[in-house]
Length: 506
Image (cartoon, rainbow, N blue to C red):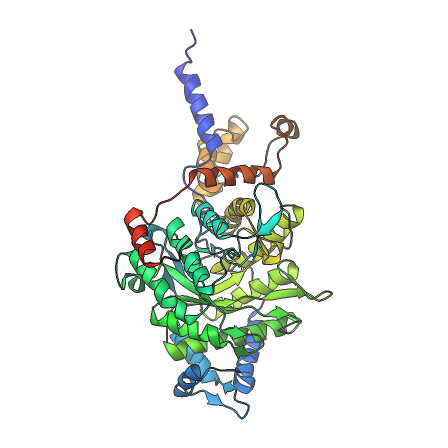
């Protein structure tokens, strides 16, 4: 009495296993993009030719003396206005000698990724100054504690392949303290590939010293860098920023891979027409590549050509919409066409709440960038309010969205097994359905992603379970992760060694 039959117990076990979903991820990061091509071959060539004309006739302005000497040594010409002009041959030499693929190392090598080619990876970025408070649902200034918490949270999310700070610790005022504490939050809370920024060149060396301690000794970080630098050396339109150029020199000296980010805004610092914008933005990002080429040819650089848009009615920055979706897709296509590791920005919803606007804008922009083959898709997780805000719930929701995007990229595998001729015959001549058949069960394990947050219950079942919305389910999951995931990636002795030297860590 009270004992189940082996047959019943086995059936319950199978049902439970199916409800849990497949043991292996059917759509992991690194799927192949490039299916969406907003530009045809003639369009690509015209935009590229215009970019080269801009570099040859208008060139780049406000070139710092240190960089000017390198440009002159490479054969660039200074015109009567003091601007540096670059011939087509010089630009194409820089493209030809650039790093086409390279590894972004994680401190855990199993988490490293290779950048370039046609593989797509979602990651983070941004410098939000506000956090959507997980308790109140309202925005407040972002803190260093938030940065630590965001880093811990994303460490558990499989579809975020690298982590860049998503918020600024507004409670840390000194710029060196801010750079130092931001970098420390990364190495303490995740072993994924990471990225950070340096306000001033003089901040690089001491932070590399901290990375060396984390990596095991002097010079260890430079031999296997697990952090890349985000730098914006070009200020639109068509000029360099001296501080960022100095940071670039110092990062290259320490063998830090760099993401040179061009962030022009259509209608403000670049043409409002999409084609004109792409031409100028491409020229500016090639200006960054020329700088890297002049310093150290072939140094690992992500060609981060990020088109941004302003609402031309008000001048306000907009992180979403059809225009930014197609611009970032076209930018990725251009970079890939040139054979350069591409970086674009997507999923920067203008919505303040986790609502229908948020979901629509995130899905449109991130899917377009992925389908176009953006190698690294920045800003893709957690960002809200046109990059002014970051949200814990958004991180969790976006991670699930990325699984669906990766499933789309995976596409349809057509082979004899998947065509299912025998399975169709068996169902038609047998039970009249495919439920429970071996062909169906194999496909369930191999071909389908099963969401944890999206609701697929009937309305009645949904009501009986409390009529929860996705936001509340994501909040629960984020809270659970933050309550339980406290990684100790540095270890007590390494952390003590770092804190003994860097007494300004908080």
